[in-house]
Every structure is written in C-alpha cells, then in structure tokens.
Image 1: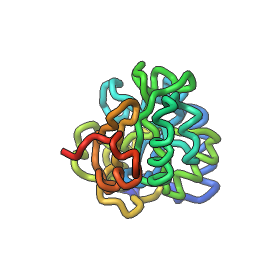
Image 2: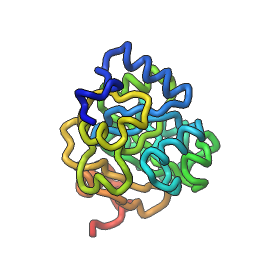
Image 3: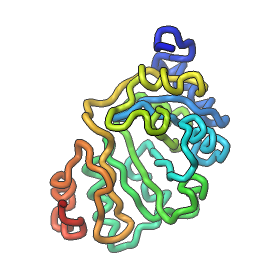
Image 4: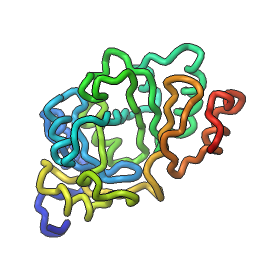
Length: 225
C-alpha cells in the first residue's frame, strides 16, 4: 500500500484536523507529524486507545508513552517537581520547547497509570510542528504519541509518511500528512526526576546545548560520557 492509494491520508487542513481531533477524543488512533517522526496520536486518558496503539505497533504494553502538551508551561500541571529542581526544569523547557526535546519528571495524580505503566514519572514534550499543535488545539487536551511503525522495523531512521502508511496505515483511523521539522534524529530525552539529570537519548539537541541552557545550574547534569 502506498500513500497515493491509501484513502485515509488527509491534508492538514483545519477541517481534517478537526475531524482527527474528534477521532482522538472518541478513543481513535490517528497518525500525525511530530518534529521528528510521524506518530500514532491518541487520548492519553483512554486506556483502550493506549492498548490499541501498542497492538498496532505489535509491541507489548510495557513502555510508557510520552505526553505532548500544547504550551511549554503545561509541564507544571502534570508533575510534582521538587522545589529545588523547578528552576532547572524551567530553564530547559524555556530553552528547548517547542521543539524536539522530551523531559522525564515526577508525575502527579493527573497522569493515569496505564500511560506510564504504573511508574512514578512521565515523559513530556511540546512540539513546534504547526500541524500537531493545531490538532492538540482541536483535541482540547494533551495527546500521547509514539512513532508510527511496527516495533523494531524502523530502527535508526525517522518514520516518514511513506513508511508509516506502509507499516501501519490500514490499522489506524486517519493519517495526517506532514513531515519532520528540519531534524536529523529522534528527540533528545533528559530525565530530570532526580539529580544528577541524565541524558537518556541524544538527538539534535546535544549535551552541550543542555549544559548551556542550565547555566549556573549545569552541575545538576551528569557529565558527558
């Protein structure tokens, strides 16, 4: 199956994004562009939708999904960051959001167990891609996202529209056209749930970028390996 022959691929118009938002609100799973990969996009609070996303990827539901907010300041609504770390988190989100940067923080009661596999933390992101920003607006709340590919079949590459449609296009409710935002790698991920902060994955945002953003709080970050 190709993009041209798949009927459920839609342009990122307001009408189509409104339809996609309705689908997500009602428990559907759609594909939308992030800053890096095309990604399965769904309601984080809908357990059935989360379980369906893992089934689409053919992956056991043992990995937490990332919560994507529309505005950088929203990390405070879903986390319980210790007072002594809040300024450092604020510097990181101010520096890299919106953009290809995810941060892992202690979660609060608003995060459902099924999203994070019962763990004490949640990964958060805030994307610059105008298509996903508009979709989140129509959805009316944050979304969960995970790359739109079969598990283990897109290692080392960013999932584009063609790959997403070929691998999982017939298993989702809608595919919104879009592409990465000038990135060359998956998002950088930093865990700031405790000190020292640890870089879990490096993308285009490097260890040096993170250290610079922290400024005089750079001692909170692990040394580059």
